[in-house]
Image 1 (tube, rainbow, N blue to C red):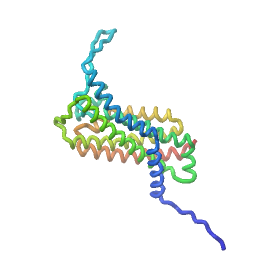
Image 2 (cartoon, rainbow, N blue to C red):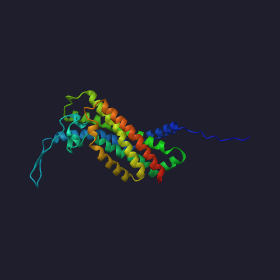
Image 3 (tube, helix red, strand yellow):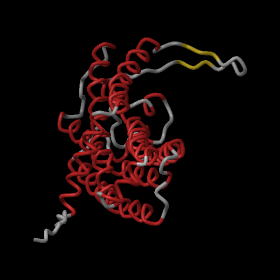
Image 4 (cartoon, one colour):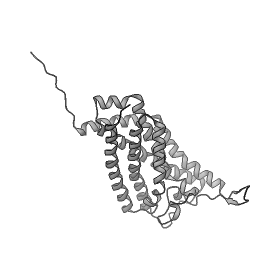
Length: 269
């Protein structure tokens, strides 16, 4: 009696679900993820406490004799963003640079490390050979990177609240509302998808060369950094959230397709 071996054909959804489960488990077991989330929480605490302690300190340039007065944060919410219409989006002062938008750089380190580990260990080549397609891989890495980046933004927000309380900074909203703060955070979370899509593309192009993927991703982030305050202001509305959500979706799909093409046209080692 002859026996036949039947191979079960998995649909795209089934393969993607499996890929996501594997990557989510890897993220939960990754030390670098917890290190970056911990850094995201501690950074605002240190920034708000230290700048408050040093506020008013006068430094003198020995060559020109020009005196500079250290200016700190006047409100906890300045650590989250700036009000739309202010010039801080294009300025390079302490308040405009040392805020929650730095988390997009931390997300770059996480995504690049996550992808580079696959290629350095040979896991990616084996994966594409026997288990998953390249589309599954790109979508899974984009989703997991987005989740990781969102967690870092939330961790920073929590750290900013704690740091502001320790530093004694006011929590007064002024002309803002709680709804504005919620919309601002949602917009920043959805905007993370734009950055993650870029990070995944750079990472699959550089593969096991982690240093190259981090440099390329950070360079791309710097080019977009000044746009973040304008797109996700403190006085954000539902329109800012929709703009970031739609933009994130379009970038995710578009750059995901490019990432898939790069994987198909280049060597996996």
